[in-house]
Image (cartoon, rainbow, N blue to C red; front, side):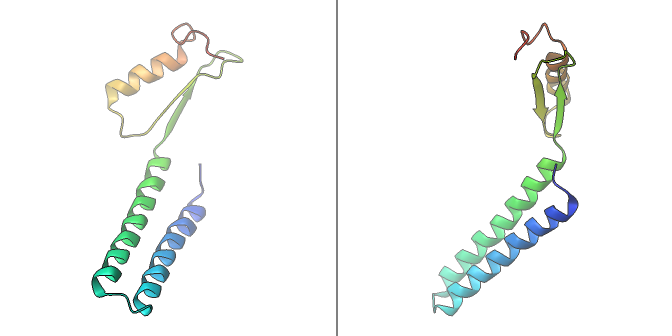
Length: 101
C-alpha cells in the first residue's frame, strides 16, 4: 500500500500537470471554450486520482490460511457486507476454492 507521502506527491503532480497543460493551451491563444475544456479535463483527472488513492486505502485482502495456497479475496470498502462475508468465507475455506494454486 502506498505511503501518505507518495499519495501527496501523486496528487500534487496531477494538479500541477493539469495546471501547466491548461496554461500552455491558454498561452497558445486557444479559444476560451478550448481552454475551459482542458481545465475541466485536468480537474477531472485530479478528482479521479483522489478517488483511486481513496479506493487503494480501503482495500482489504484475505488469504487462504493453507500453507502454499495462493488463493485470496481482494475487495474495497464499497463491497456490501453480505458480499464481503461470502468472499472472506470462500477465501479462508480451502475446500471451497478447490485448493487453487
